[in-house]
Length: 125
Image 1 (cartoon, one colour):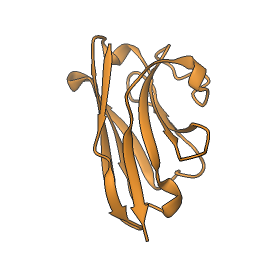
Image 2: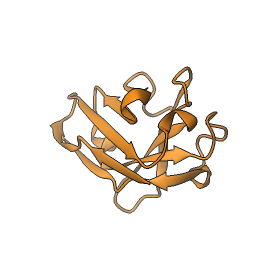
Image 3: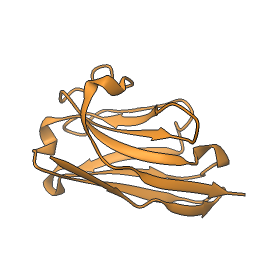
Image 4: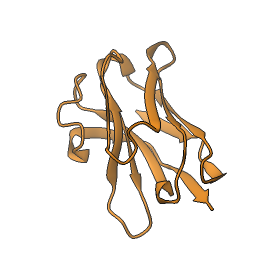
């Protein structure tokens, strides 16, 4: 199983980026998917999750209203659209597959079993 995250980069505050997570080796529709991030010197934190059929999405309070998680199961791909980026959004972003289709306990990283390598997002002033 491989998760390939891409789309990170340098963006000015207020700008937008779209992250992509391409998954191979499993059928993504059977699993909820999540995005986490880790800033330098900080612990990894939950950002967003979406259940297997895309019908429900969940967000950290810090990104609610600015970020949107979506998925295209036909392409085995998950996206994170990030708008109105803030300096505090600077971090390495990781996608991960949840152990179930229903995103139960979606904030807990221990419930995700496969992880991508991370893509770096840097927001400048």
